[in-house]
Image (cartoon, rainbow, N blue to C red; front, side, top):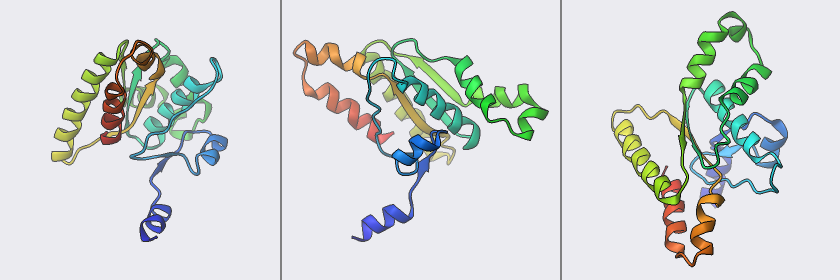
Length: 173
């Protein structure tokens, strides 16, 4: 019971940048947990990912790693989201601030599960090194979309081990 109370009092959440979605997620994306967005094709899942990316990079001033499996990452769309909610600082130094925000976002194109494992392993190594230095700057990891990587393996008689390994890596990060 104490663990539940502690979790409720010390919620570490990242806002997606959309009040309605944050409300559905009981405050936003919970740090240290996997959140899966599910919906029909073209229902806005990638847009939510891009919005959360822009919000975390801008408002939390933290790093975001975006693993893009379908060439859907759009730097211009991220910039559009940042400009949607202007504040005086952005009006004064738009270019400099946009550049800082965009520098906090690291996008990797990943087209198969094995490349994703490699990228996740390298990210784990980098994060361990940053943590030892007390300088961990990645706050959000997005995989858009993992289904295109897992479906060929599961559909082709692949083992659950690959899927489990991917989930384990994600939980660690």
